Length: 142
Image (tube, one colour):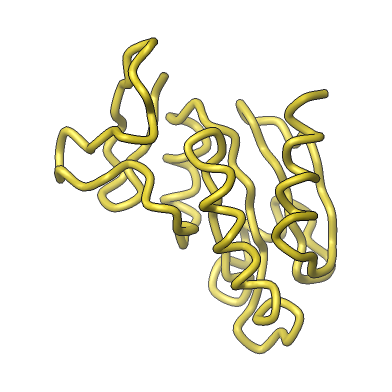
């Protein structure tokens, strides 16, 4: 499995049978999973989406959005529950307008679940951590 480091964006290979949750980056030495969402620019997004094997749960948000700010702690909690099976990422739609347009984001917060270059789920609006985890697990099981 290929996992992109959330700190330096180096692609790391995790051998079959080795617990991914304990993996460290071969380049920067930091943990590949730390239970926190990763803020991505368009360039960093491409690296994670194209070179990594993990599904990405993308939170399209903006700093002025009340529901986005209200959901931020739940998204953080979901990262603890879903890693290392899923990489949770945040995309600021004010700063990354082309990426938001590429996904056709019309309202925020919008959550998109992407795996191997294909969107496998989307929902809009804030939700608590437990509902978010359940939503992701349901999409990955199907």
